[in-house]
Amino acid sequence: MPGPAYPAARAVAATIKDYFARRFAVAQAKPQQLAPQPDAAAVEAIINATFWASLRREEGYPPKISLAFLPPEASPQPMTFEQPLELTPPVLSRLAPAVERPGIHLGVWGDPMQNGELRVWGVTRMIPKLCFVLEVIEPGLLVVKYRRGQETGKYVNVVVLKGDEIKVVDEQGTSLPDCPALVTALLGFGAPGATGDSLNVLLQLAASMRAHGRGGSLLVVPQGSDKWRESIIQHVPYAVAPPYPELAALLRQDANERSKPIWQEAFIDAVDAIAGLTAVDGAALINDQYELLAFGAKIARRESGGRVDQVVVTEPVVGNVAAVVQPLELGGTRHLSAAQFVHDQRDAITLVASQDGRFTVFAWSPCEEMVHAHRVETLLM
Image (tube, rainbow, N blue to C red):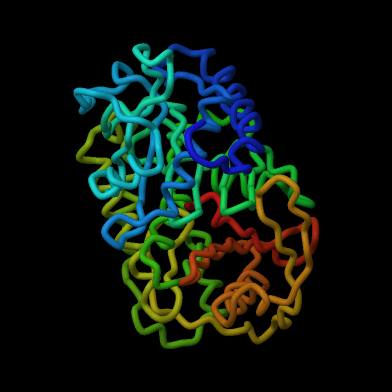
């Protein structure tokens, strides 16, 4: 292995190999195009080179790189280099400005002319399902992920590496003290029996909210009920009447329409439009059919309800232990008001993005009989 070793790469390589092996075992039960399955040696080498590349700077800029493990023939319309390049930190950092836009990956595969040693063979925009991808988020922060299958879907995160810290996503939700199906159903990671191709709108909204970087809150309430108004200060400055149906209308279209690029572009635009409203001071509201009700709403404690004093907080990573904390410990008044809303409106959920990248989903836990705060930024990077 060229250059210094990154200890976390070796420590996590076998775990990642086993994760993909489980996914491949399930996916191979039906005919479909799959990426090649990564082995531990390839995983370690790619992570090691990319970590050290992330700490370099090219013309003063930190690199943002995404690498995909696949041969050129597994990618439609690959852009291949005449001579494959070494998988080293200097090579990766020099290439970074060319591939830092979302959806562009450096292709990495064993070079038969070099005894199978990994080389960067070129650039690809399209990768098959279950392709091992490593993305640099910021210096020293890497995410191992793969694509679910649909082009509009967010990648599934497998492991987050930050320096010597390793966070392995708990694919079964076993770290949750109760009701583990809540987050698996809500965010669609590793749910037993899930196909991985179902469109998870809340996940798309969460990723878009986090991406705008301003922080914000999104309240999701039952369709056909005005009970939520009891927890909102009147008058709502940006109430929408009738409810705005763009996203809901798109989701009512059949599978044939959803497969078309024009639908996928419209879906992304509709998601980003709603997520963008959360940047306005106050909270945005949608119903559970994804119709927009209002934005800029101010949350208040319901007159007949008590004050939320404690919440249980978990993160869906292996080894996480639930903790009971005061809501303000999660991030300030935005988190406190979101927890209060769920405490009063127990059939609602709230999604809260912080400016520092943290992301929390609040929902009522009938098992714990308190508000449950799910820290999910590990799933959204």
